[in-house]
Amino acid sequence: MPKQTTDVDRLVGLRITALRKARGLSQTALGTAVGVTFQQVQKYEKGQNRVGAGRLREIARLLEVPVSAFFEEDDNSGQSDAFGFLGTQGAIELLRAYALIGDDQLRRDVLALVRTAAKMGKQAPVAEPGAA
Image 1 (cartoon, one colour):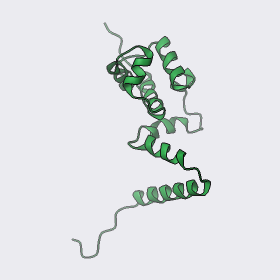
Image 2 (image 1 turned 135 degrees about the horizontal axis):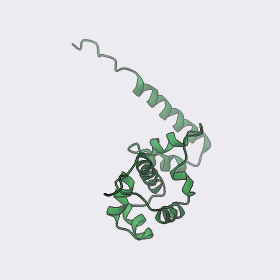
Image 3 (image 1 turned 180 degrees about the vertical axis):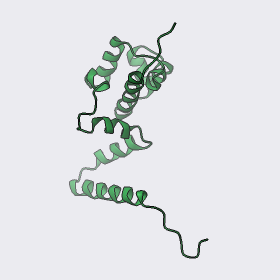
Image 4 (image 1 turned 45 degrees about the vertical axis):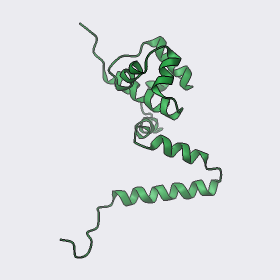
């Protein structure tokens, strides 16, 4: 009987995805570096296949994180939330662009703009006058 993957396997996969994207690596590049196909990387990232200890250690080395980064629980530092946010469409690209802004004041202004947009997105849409 084959071993079933668990929620931990899926969590590890999500974190591999987020960290890989944060490093700007493709699934193919990561797979080649650790000696597996991109399809195998896809299965790891989806939590369909378990990542062996040796391979996870190699992935951690390539992504420049400790192996514990794949397992740590949220310790009120927001780290678990950060991994969830990194899975949001466009989050990695937004962070990369933000990091390239050299001017501190401009960076604060961009952050204020994004916060305002987020608040506007939470508000219920206002019906236009005369709309039925």
